[in-house]
Image (cartoon, rainbow, N blue to C red):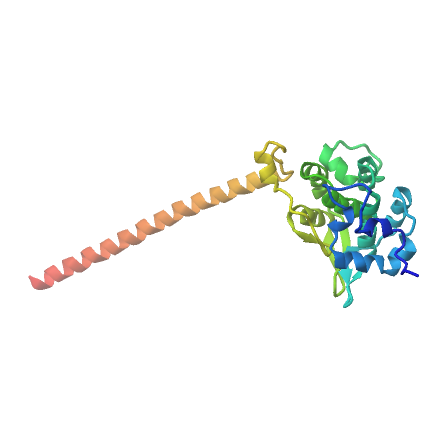
Length: 265
């Protein structure tokens, strides 16, 4: 009797995969083979991921307490990584993934008053279950196209909630915006090699994306102006000090010349 691999057999069958493709390849191949083997051999995969669909996977994801790839000397996969692999097996519709990303969230502030926010801030405030949001963001980076990835994930850079991250040696603290920035800029996240994606600058040059306006743009401009004013004032003061030093030096030189002339006479 073959070893139990939950319901991943069809996904891992190298003799001919007939399911949905991501960028023309088997979704399982987005994970390295060593990681795939560790996932399908893990207790969490066999016990908690068997028979999951898009709805029940959401129930598992809201129970997550940390993000991460593998941990320990044996490189055990985290539940976060197992559920990400399960999403690659399911290949859920984009509407479902967006629902994961923005699940819940209130449109009122802490006191119950209505507040007016722009689109990016509103999308960042949504997502009641932060680890469900992180899981959806990780899947989007793996499975979607570059323009969609940037347009969908960049608003999450305004989400500053804390995340617990499991590393090989223990736990560390990170933030949602930092995790999303890693997805957009790094080549390896959560023990997974991410496919090489065009940079934002390249997409802007191709006119596929509009230039991104930072919410801190006005503050940065004010700081630049203050730095420029400070440098100009320092420059004026330094010029004045140089002139005064030169004048004092010339004065002392003339005094010495006069004294030498008097002695010679």
